Length: 129
Image 1 (tube, rainbow, N blue to C red):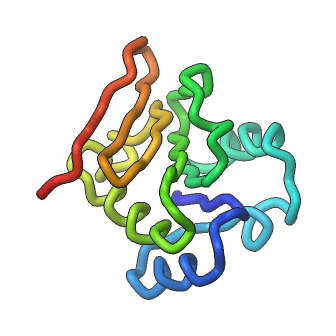
Image 2: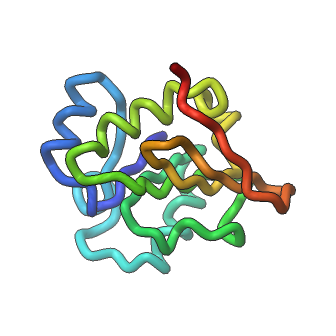
């Protein structure tokens, strides 16, 4: 299940819908508008294998790695959000829920930096040409 933070703008949500990328959004489909960050992790534990996308860099922390979910910090502009959600979901290193579970990632124009549960080093994945 793809979960978008409420900080993902409506136009980008519409683009994801046009591309038929399924998601649920905090404040729209899940939880309530204004849900505190500290309450999002318990919510993710109750969802089936979620991948949570946000513009909030507080979620890019190795200590948040958990085998049940993935956290993805989108370090891109608002207008690039949908494009980079799609690129991330299609990347060979992250293109299944099984490959995404247990990671905390930062998505940038230059590639993906990520921690994986059970590994202490920050890893990188370049975008496919």
